[in-house]
Amino acid sequence: MKKYILFSLLGMIALPCTALDPLFTSSVQPPTGCIDKNVTADELALADLVQIGICTNPSLSAQYMGVKATEANLGVGRSQYLPTVTVTGAAGVNGYRVESHGDYVQSEPYTGKAEANWLLFDFGGRESRVSTLRAYADAANYSYNAAVKDLMLSVQTAYLNLLAAQETLVSAKASLDSYEQSYSEAQKRYKLGMVSLSDKLQAQTRYEQALLAVVLAEDEVKQSSGQLAVLLNLSPSTPLKLQKPQFDQSVTSIEKDDVEQLMKDALENRPELRAQESVQKAAKSSVTAAKTSMLPSISATASAAINDTSWKNHSLYERNNTVGLAASMPLFTGFSNFYKVKSASWLYQQELANTQNLRLAIQNEVWHNYQNYKTAVRSYEISQTVLDSAEENHRVAFRYYQVGKADILTLLDAVARLADARQNKISAFYSLLLSKASLYKSIGK
Image (cartoon, rainbow, N blue to C red; front, side):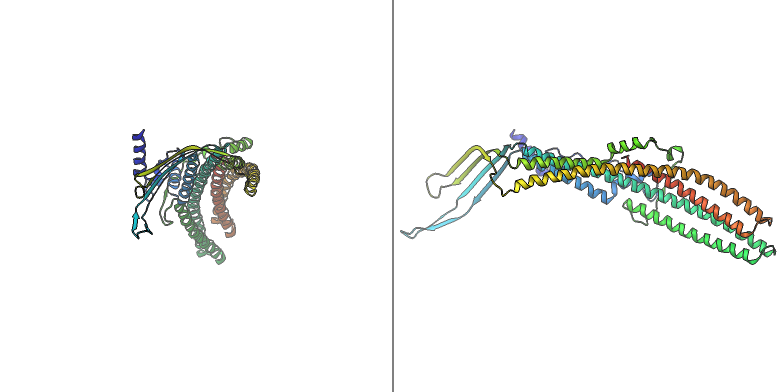
């Protein structure tokens, strides 16, 4: 036993405090499996971006430290089940002068004392306090999980926004080519005297507007890339190469197309609700802890003391040893304990209402995101049809303008409709992916 105690003390001295967990409170571990990739050279898939974000995001790291702090507080609570041992010592110099003969007498006494106290019984107060701390630790853990999911959605949103911006740039350049083609045709026909100067000028104006749209699209790509880089704890100027996913039916569809079932899944899976339920549990335990503070407690006590008395008598030192039981009973505390119970009870009722309110909010969020998703699916389907029609309309209008059967306004209108159709399809597609991501996040996936 002596060897075990010695090795334990040596271990506590050798290891940093953060590495010790003698009361087994630590359950949340830091992110693992962080990928080893050169973010400026390698192509990054969505899974890579999410993993980098979880491992490097400073806000998430700060919340993880808060979780570890609540676990340490739980250790403080569990320590109440163990005895406390206190050792004190004192040494000094005393001196006095003898009145009868005027001699000065000096002594160097010392004292040492060790006291132990062990709470044996307090009508469940200690257990309630530990339960409260355990619930708060669970709440912090669930809140951290919710923050991880929030970050995942933020990274996915930034990733999709960047892809959408890149697709918009491609679309803007395609529209620029169409306007350039129209402008070139109008110039040619103007030189041949087949159309008026107005045709050439209108085509030129639309071409320059399309050129401006390309510049704006390029800026949007840079802005979206910077937002994604910041989420990864990188400089906004960091160039990122994205690995585009293979788009198929599974990308746009969901596993369970039943809103009632999705709402049930959300109530079972959402970490925010689990965190709130843990806070509610902590509030309930606090009521019990407040009530037990009005009851007696029983503790075992022991002490051993040594006093140096060699300077005043022939004995070298004195020893005093005591062992016994101590009972404590708060008789009157100015009604403070009474009001502590009332406060804890009302706070518990408040947390009950907060839990119910959060349940309703989660159901409403799932319902709202589900309807958005269904609308996005339908919008994407329509945008595909509109694009096919706009492409055919542009081909016909351009051909008619070449042979003189249509004016420049008809051609430019067809080009504008084609450009809008391209952009609408891009917006509809990525809005569909974003609405699906929001729906999955709202059900706790």
